[in-house]
Image (cartoon, rainbow, N blue to C red; front, side):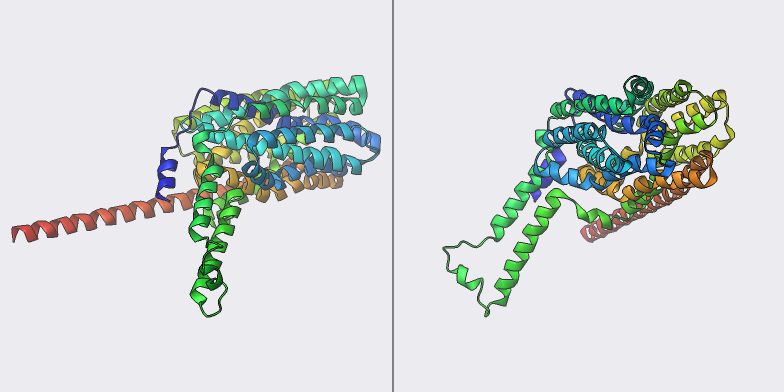
Length: 478
């Protein structure tokens, strides 16, 4: 175990060189996953008209995709430990493409739930989770900036894809547009090919070696006379040792794939509750912005342009506030709390907008604050659990957050159908985000209390050392 600690102490992230190619891969993955999800609202009106369904019924397509991303994140983490980041991402890209192409032939909304919803979401989970984990391993000093730069892929591709989807729908209908999107998703396989593991930071390998060492230490040779002692009822201590070694080996094998001990980390669980309520409000606004604008009498391409305006300011927000976070002027969790409160407040003001200029101003404000929030939330997660546990933490965080991502759009759609006004969906999202900020305030207090406790213990140790030294000096003088 001492050798393992030395190896872990010696690990350093490159923060440059091939790390920039990992950043490029993560940039494209963000764009081809969450960027597509944010742009998918353009399809909603066409799908509603084709299948004569409600806003709630249509919203389940994206909701199932988002929920599957979150539910399948721990599976992606385990598969990455079993296989490799590269192979899992490539498989995910193929599943995404298959789901969208089959979905283009759907005969009802249920088939869209299974293809564009479930299959596509599963592929997104297998591509996004390993790529973000790999980015965290390649960057340490510049990690906040790297996460911010990678997440800008979501904004840039949203800016490009929203008007492109509208053009494709007008030219080839929504089914033809889905086929083209399915072909575009094959680029996720290329992103997977760019991933190259770090030899010195392969956590799975280290755990493998430790697991093998522990099993070897506890194994009893078959040829040995001890083989009979192991099953002899007159030696209960030997039986207990054998059971302990089997349990230790089993526990090590599980920890190799999923670090389930995270659920006992109070700070991680508080941050996960923030994720649940934040997810309720994160996805609904982007999905309903275009339909809301259309309901106010704004023409198709102007409504699509609102998403492009939001994406442009989202890009600036991620870059600028990611850079601010990298300066470490304030604690990252404090910065995240402020941006989440601002985001919730902006969403509550959305129903006041009715003209194109007012909606453009709202889209700009929403995009700016949304970018400021998204750019640092993974950085805060790494600070809460440590980068060595980021892979498992990201999987568990996504799993716990899944309930919010799954239920957010349908709940917003329910209010829209009941009230007959898309503005109520934005109010629901704003309230959810303001509630999530309360958990960030609690996390900040827990962190402060932990720091004070650590400092107090350190000072007590220093006082004890000082007193012992004084006692030794007195003895020497005597």
